[in-house]
Image 1 (cartoon, rainbow, N blue to C red):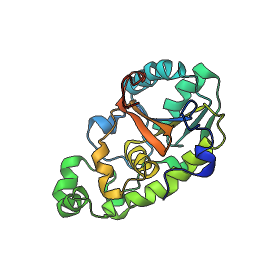
Image 2 (cartoon, helix red, strand yellow; image 1 turned 90 degrees about the vertical axis):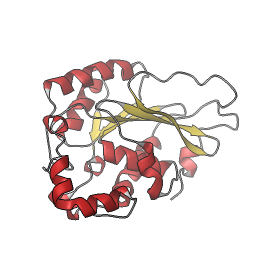
Image 3 (tube, rainbow, N blue to C red; image 1 turned 90 degrees about the horizontal axis):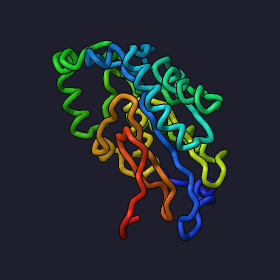
Image 4 (cartoon, rainbow, N blue to C red; image 1 turned 45 degrees about the vertical axis):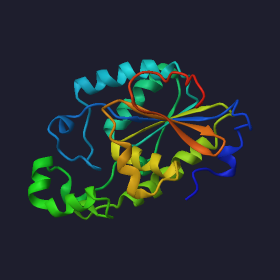
Length: 227
C-alpha cells in the first residue's frame, strides 16, 4: 500500500513549506497495564493515574492547535481524547476501526500466562511471522482497518492542519508502519509507546515521515542538514 494518496500529498509544496501532521497518541494507564495483562479489544477504564496522564498530555498537545480529533471508541482511549477535547473545544469522532488488536484467547492473560500457554505462538510472532495471536487478528489486518480511517480524516484537514488520533499501542505501531510504507516484518522495529505518549508523522516530499516516536514532550524543530 502506498504511504500517501494524491489528496494526502497535495498540501506539500516542493520545498516542504506546508504540510499536515498526524499525532498518534496512546491512551493513559489502566489497571491491566500495571498487571501486564493483555487488553486487546477488552474495554478497560483508565486508572486515576491514567486520567492524570491524559490531562497533562492534553495540555501539551493543545498547544499544537489540532484541527481534529479521532479516537478509538474503547473507554481508555475515548476518556483520553475527552481531556484534549475539553481544552480545545473540538468534537471527538469515535471509530471502532481504531480499536486495539483483537487477540482472542490471549485477552485477559498476563504476559507470563501467555508465555506458559502460547509460548510457541508468542515466539513465532516475535520472529515476525504472521500469527493470529489467540486466534485473533493479524497485525496487517489491524493496519488495513485503521490506516484508511486515519487517512480519511487527514484528507479533511487544511493545508497545514494537525490531526490527533487517540488509539492503542499495537494499532498505532501498525498504522505508522503502513503509512511509512514499511514491510510488516519491520513494524516491530518501531518499538512500543508508553502510556499517554505519542508519535508524530509529517508530510515530506516522498510521503509520510516519522518525526517523533514515543514522545512525551512537544516536538522540537530539526536543525541541521537532515531536515
